[in-house]
Length: 542
Image (tube, rainbow, N blue to C red; front, side, top):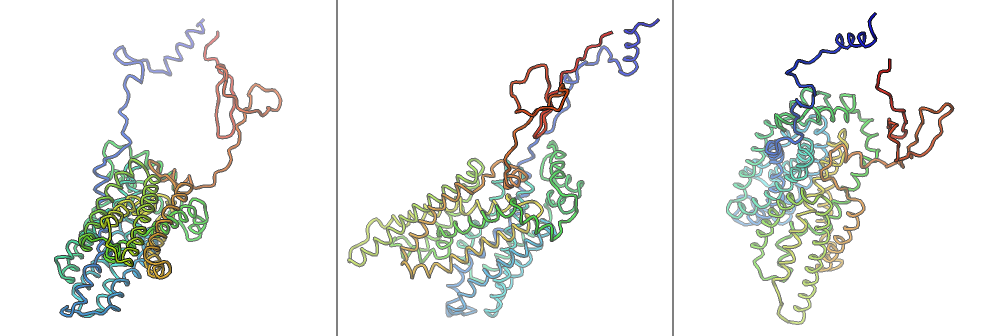
């Protein structure tokens, strides 16, 4: 008769392949090389630069009238204009910008991020060519409207695309490239506008969106959009490989996107309306909208659009045109500094720097203006004429670090993926409309509370906005887009876990989970219930 040991041994020999003498017994001795989770930073930077190159055009639109209108108003100009026509040339682009924001919110989800970035460059190229070759002022109107349309369209898709192709540790810096591009455009317009005629400058401006159009053909489509709108896993994986690294674990990222994506290929209009009513959609939209209003009522773009007049009225003796160029350099420099600080500090600290720094510097600026008026009325010479311009430089530096970067970066981060393009476009529209409101109310505010009083109001609003940032501004540093989306859901009160004893003979009693569990039991844990199962005996008794 065969013993029990022999029977069991023969079964084991059949079911299990015995290793050779030279083979290692433990699997841990031969670990498979694990792929890294962080992709190539260089690839992500290059893709982000290509996607955000068109944002330079936004700065060109802002700065063009500051250098071209004085030339157009000269009698020897090829097209002579009056002050009424000059105001229309300056403001007609702000009509096209909100229209572009709305179109971008539709095209970003319908066509995809890449195709939208390609399409939106066409109005800018045509618009600048129309301005440069214009024979009547009406052609300039149409051209300015088209370039404003393009600048409105670029805001949302460039930021959304950058956020979706970059990893959390780089997302904040790369998403801020759009703000850097706008600041660079303003500075370039000031510099080249001082040496070029208004029509030649327009032709130069057309080269910027032309380069952006060329670069957009070489970037991959957003992997998030390929999953959420096309449900195409293969193209999503291929897109991630182009913006990551061959050693990067893109499969895990694809699986995460699949888990977060809905099963439908397209999100219907009714579903989008339902998503907008969710806390994860309307909460961040309200926060971003209020952020835009507060940042604009700090006086940021009042200084940008009225820089020459503000410096002239401040009492400073420095040349107002030289100071304007310095302001452009400060804007570009501190936009870059803000991008670096955002990666290290996060969004909320930069918001605090802007709110407190802008508030104090603007109140100092307003106080000097008030004192300068008193000195002028008393016939006394002004003292410390360097003080107002230094206050203005500090204000511009602080506002650029946070106000000019954070809300625009948040557009690409805080909205749900299914409606990120739509809400991103609407939020961008709110941002530009906030600029319009502040610029329109600035003359009215001057009449009501005087010039120095207007800047004092901006300083107070900036200081009070610190309270809003403390309680409501989300910190998205090093968080995935899914984690950010989930943070806006209504947080339900967690139930205390219960323990069901597997040894109980009657209905199990419910009691609080005990952290001091004995070593003889194993716990099978679920979100709300913990089952205590007796430890199984692995020995064989014969």
